[in-house]
Length: 122
Image (cartoon, rainbow, N blue to C red; front, side, top):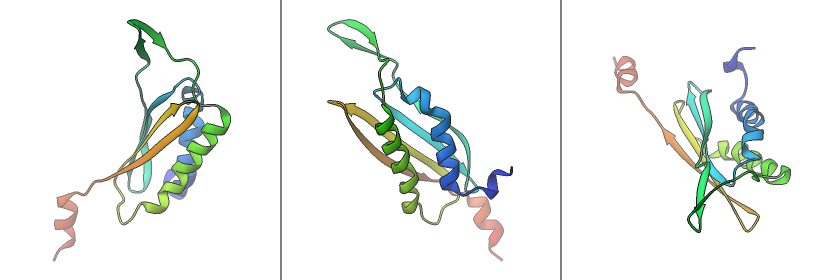
């Protein structure tokens, strides 16, 4: 299967299926998806695995439940509607659980290459 033949939404779905178990253990973090030529290359999750409460380090082992995961995944796919006119960049999806409710946001970073622009001008 050639990656370029898959719609970007399907690729995002594949990313979320790959990181599902990791998200199930996290209460906050950032999912990053790097895009080149409208195809996903590198992706992953940035997070702090330990936090301090009352001076004691505690790890988080209870993260997103199935309904929260599905909601987050759907938000990521729906966010692609706001991606306009760029083929290279990064999508960052921040999430946190507060009082057992999922809060999430999306940030796009578009990248352009001057040499590509110069190659197109006569």
